[in-house]
Image (cartoon, rainbow, N blue to C red; front, side, top):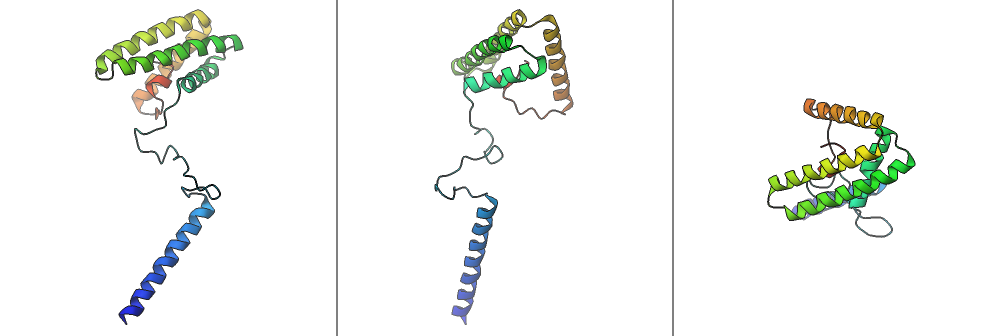
Length: 162
């Protein structure tokens, strides 16, 4: 009788595991690719907090530049110039993180200086109208963040406002 119960439990367990693996394959949720047997990179929702894949400085500069282009309607010439100064900003922030990793206050001050220099460079590139649009955008974003309406997913380096 005990043997029959063990066999029955084993059969149910095996069929359950098999059914779950088939369902995962159909839905594409499997961590292992079907043909290559390689582990897929976890999506952002699967990645534990603080373990996100880090973007390269060039990726961050492209992201910031794209946002500025969208918000301010930049010309092609402006896009090139903005990307260059933004890449410098992102690299400077990265270097400041390394040099001030134990001192958050020093990093914050250095980051603020980098932002002020970047903003001054933006003023030389952008028109007065574009700077006004940028100021309005920053205020809206700041107010939305205060009100808790904006789920700010951006890193500090990826924002166009301080």
